[in-house]
Image (cartoon, rainbow, N blue to C red; front, side, top):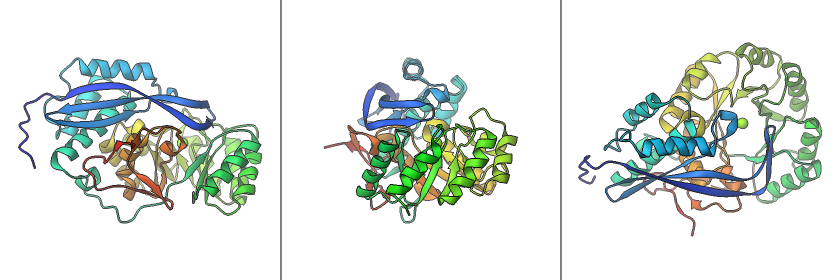
Length: 352
Ligand SMILES: [Mg+2]
């Protein structure tokens, strides 16, 4: 370890990270073909830690709100002068304002990157993890015309993807599943309704999806739905029910105990890796399964998420693979798995 003086202030800089998707990406909230995330750089001595904010409106964050929050932190001394004090720094960020988890997660992952670079070790190793056993990741088929759904599925099969996630929450959900099954009859499949169904629709669809060999359903009901409604769906569904948008932090997991089978963890919802660990542990304490997901983000954000992949049952870390212009290289998709490197910190480098 280097002799770090802990006297230099951590410097925050940020800039837009303009991403373009290969295909327009549709979910029940709308369709995007490009997304501007925010690249966060934390400078300390001669080291630089990187983070990515991927704000989404359905979690009450926009590019503008994230920029405003980062600007505030930049003009204050809130980041302090000790990059190792990640827990304390995040506590200050949480005290300074509620929510804004995408902005917080960018700073938190950049701190992990910084610490790893200072001590010369990958983040996953510093978190006490190994890269020996973890699940495969899926690839997401967004909402589109039936023709395009079938085409995208064929492309995914040809590209060697081993499992798929299919977006639902339309008036033609059953036809989407049939189109996917035409091109990928036996591939493991999970479904994400992004809150697009009522309780009645969710139960009806669960039976249909079970007949089409779907593994589980993610966020059948809206984010605002009551815990009791999830419980009703779970009791009458032949498939396990996971919650994504309804669960941001560990206290949400506790609220949903007994009403769902699993939680979807994302750094943009937890505000970083440390709170993601809490979400995972809380889920385990309640006997729930865990899937780690991501937003549309570059290999920077996805690789930060992949640090925790060995703790999960399912992975949905395809955000960067949906892009036509991923500026970074980090976790690399190979034969179904996201392979992490031994590089220090998050292990992310600019794409050659
Ligand atoms: Mg989801």
